[in-house]
Every structure is written in structure tokens, then in C-alpha cells.
Amino acid sequence: MIRRMSIGVLPGFLLAGVLACAQPGVEDPALPAHPFPRWVSELESGQTVEAVRDRFGPPDEIEMNARGERVWRYAFTEIEWPADDPDRPVVSEDGGAGPPAPSAFARIGDGFRAVGLWIDGAFFFPPRQPRPPARRSLPATIHRLEVVFGADGTLRRVHYRPERGIGFVSNGS
Image (cartoon, rainbow, N blue to C red; front, side, top):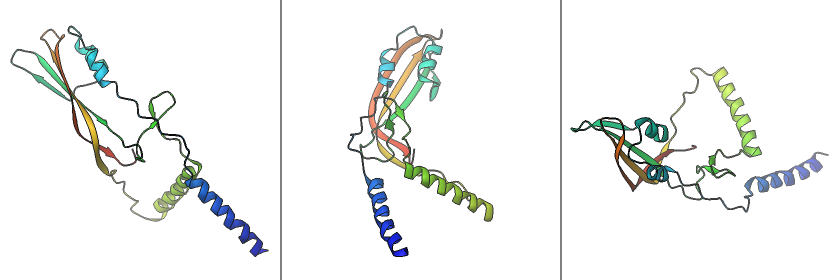
């Protein structure tokens, strides 16, 4: 009886292993380009500080120059992900970046991990301390934007330059 059961269990484990390692034949779509360059092209003289802040958010740096003008500086890093990178964001059906859907094995693994962490926290003191995620560098396009506002708070001029650089990402992000 036990021998018959062990003969049936082995093919079941092999089948589960093959299904877990199988990859779909669908090609990953390219990540959508960030609209930052398009937003810059839509800037026009006379726009207000509020309109620029609504579009780009708070600036990274603010400076006042000798003419009484306010200079806002932005730096946005657009990561260039390799196609086979496991941390690469997933593109949803509408073209936006979205979280990857966990597989059944990943959900089961998360359940076991949660139980293990609970047991670890219940029986061992002090509890496990969180660690910051590891960081790594990837090639990137750095969008640098300088926006100059006059003393009246309206847009005077814009200086935009994209440049090649390095961006940093956290593993598992």
C-alpha cells in the first residue's frame, strides 16, 4: 500500500515542478515612456507657479537670483530596465505600470513565510529587525528641468536637458 502511494507521489511532484518552471510564450511588452518630456514641451511663458507645481510637483531645489526671479530645479530619473530583469515593473493592459500578479506558488510561499515570522516573533526575543532593501544601479535617462519665474510669479523661461546617467533601485521594488 505504501509502495503504491510513493509511486503516485513522485510523478505528482515532477508535474508540479514542471508547471512551476514553465514560462508563458507571451513576450513582455515594453514599459511605457514617462510623459516628462511631453510635459516640458507643454510649458508656456505666462503660466503660474501653481500650474507648474500641479504638473511636476514640488521642486527638488529652489533658488532666488539677483534679478528677483525664482528658479525651480527638477531632476527625474527614468530607469532603463533590461527585458529579463526580475524586478522590472509589469505593464498592465492599459499600458501603465502595475504590480505583478502573484502565482499560486508565490501565494503559498507567502503563507508559509507569514507563519514562520509569527513563530519567530512569538518565541524569540528580540524580534527580527527589518533591514533596508539592497540597492543596485541601472542605466537611466536623467531629465533635468530648470524653470524660471519672474517676480510676478509667472513663467519666464525653461531650460530642459535629458542626459545619460545611473539610477538606483531597490531590489524587489
